[in-house]
Image (cartoon, rainbow over all chains, first blue to last red; front, top):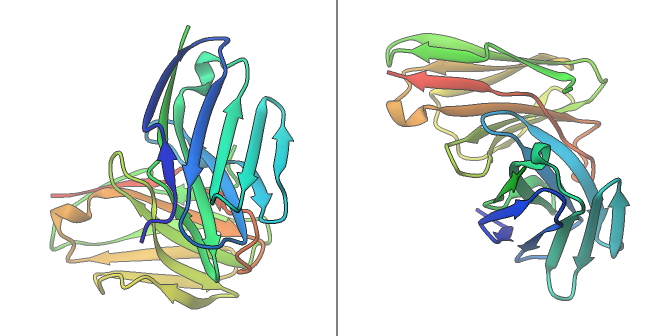
Length: 110
Length: 114
């Protein structure tokens, strides 16, 4: 069953702009992870945020987590054409590893 | 670059064929996973192995048969598949089966059933 739901489903921006993607989930979580997938390729782990954390940074990435609203956001600053990909949030619920949301397709136009 | 290696990258098989997908990791991880991903859909969990024992089977049809020969290897044996089984099959691993660990994915094996 699906846990996360990303918003928007598709996002198109100009190079240099910031991209924000949101993820909502349904049940309590241990942690939430964000992944990137280039077309037809494997998933690349971006960042993990634990349920007791509110914000985390990694390079140009900033992730927030609001457990009261059951939501997370991924901000990519100063986007590049190479950031074009699908981005998924995934949650760990109980002992079930990684249940993925539907994903956001990001297009960064040079 | 991923440290989870999957072979083959592409596989075309008939509905009566028997084939296998292979996955290898050398990160010392003790949990390994198979996910299935259809086009424009998120990955869906199929199986989890923890310390070489099957710990999760997400009600996958028996025409998919996983095998974990040792802690570094994970196979997915395929037999009597249907065209709707065509998908990207992703292998992944994590340090152990604890759900809090980061899961690392391979590049996937594209399967086409004809």
